[in-house]
Length: 232
Length: 71
Image (cartoon, rainbow over all chains, first blue to last red; front, side, top):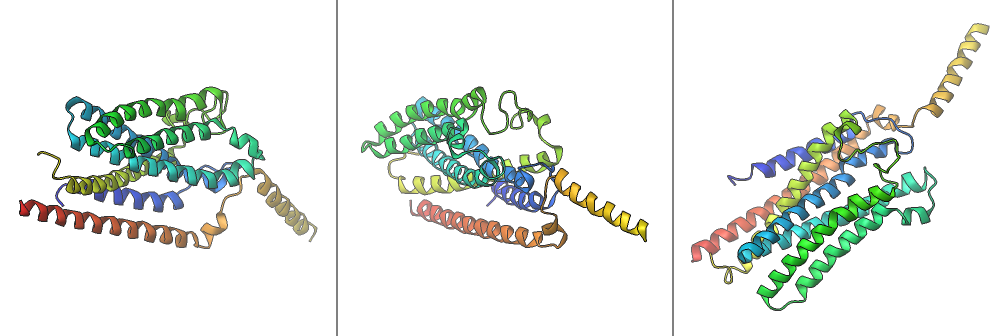
């Protein structure tokens, strides 16, 4: 357990997230009220997903550069945990929609269904879903690794346009819509309250590290299982 | 007495208007300390999750050790 400092860091940061996330003061806003604290949980799932998918993308490129089978295992498992985070982000978003957009803002179900960020996120998750289907449909290990690595690069290329660029261009109920008064809270640090940033950034790191930890466990299991075909 | 009633009315109206101007926050949850129950529940879940992942980590480490020694 010598290299496990980041696992401890993840635990400490998440304890900090829960304690300070619930107890510290947050901006008092209409509609959002106390649900603004979901920023530390719901939004962090999406940030964690993006980071994990990015790691997976890097390992896919690494695989294609040297055709080392272990890089394919890394790419697969990081993508799997990333997709898990995405699904959790979607589920938590569904709960949040109910009390803010639908109940308090009076949005109809139709306008929620048309919300470009929801559609974009669904597209991104489905593209990654197809990645897992693709992987499962091969019997030849080398072919599976090569084709899915190429596909993973395509999936990553679609990720940011579908969850960030298109929703911001066409306008969405999420913060950061063009012409909105809330600026760009996800990317410009001046558009987020300083008190919230103090919890939000550590929360992203904490959740992401937990995801990385789970992914490494899956990777180590896969490596053990496929030990005979990995020449080390 | 009149003054007293006036201030009372003044106070009440200020209370009512403040309830409308300011976004409603869960102040009661904070003032009676029940928020700590929420924090404690979430922390218990988090700690439980981490213990689970930690034990899994240790099991895999032990297994890795065994397969390495077998070689």
